Every structure is written in C-alpha cells, then in structure tokens.
Figure 1: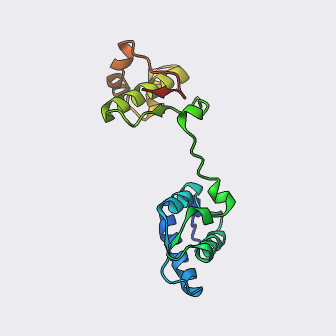
Figure 2 (figure 1 turned 180 degrees about the vertical axis):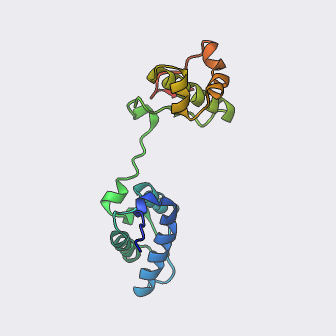
Length: 166
C-alpha cells in the first residue's frame, strides 16, 4: 500500500506543531530546557512554507534550539533563506501587480468587501467574452453574477488592479 504525504509547504497548518515538537526535542537533547518560538519566528516559518524535506525542517529547528536566547527562539536566529521569505514592503513602495488589489484595512468591512467584489467582477468581465464565462470564472451562477453587478451598472468602476483604495 502506497501512502502519499504531501510536502510540508502544502500543509502549512501543520508547521506550528512540527516546529514546536522539533524545537522541544532538540532543546531537551542540548539541555536547554523549555524553549518557545517567538510569534514572529513562527510567522517566518509559515510564510516560508517549510523546507522541502522534514530533515531540513528538523535541522532548522536544531539550529534555533542551539542559537536561542534563554527561553525563546527569535527570528534573528533563522537561516537566511527562511528570513528572506517574509518580504513585507510598504504598499507605497510596492509596484502595482495586475492580478492583485490593495485594500486599506482602516475602512469599514462592508466598504472593503464591496471594493473587492467590484474589482473582481470588473476583471472577470474584462478577461472573458461574456457573462456566462465570467460567472464560471468567479464560481458564481449567472444569476449570482447579475445580482452582484449593480455597483458596476451604476458607473462605479473600481480602480485598476494593483492600485490602493482609500
């Protein structure tokens, strides 16, 4: 019987459990006592998606256990390739990407959702040859697409993809 286990990067939800397990295992082996991962460190590991193999992941946790401060493994102790995985760039410095849209988080949720829906509807209608195809692309029925299009019929076109919304 063959058992297919996808790579860890495809099971990101499991990364915290693996990270904590290996960190405690190696901390105990090294006589370091209880170690914990800083929240930022876990964020890096999850964004990185885990090394290609469980062996590489275990080696990264061994490294953290060896370099950790008395009780906590901080992000500064991560290897360079994992540290580079968290590429946060302020929106003002980021070039627009046609398939992405920036939504401000300091606005009411309803306004953000409405903006996102308008942008996706507009993009789907522009990329396809008709309403049926656009609805299928968005995972909607024809009626569902029609019910979501009043903002577009009112002439409120969303900004081009990749631009920030106030």
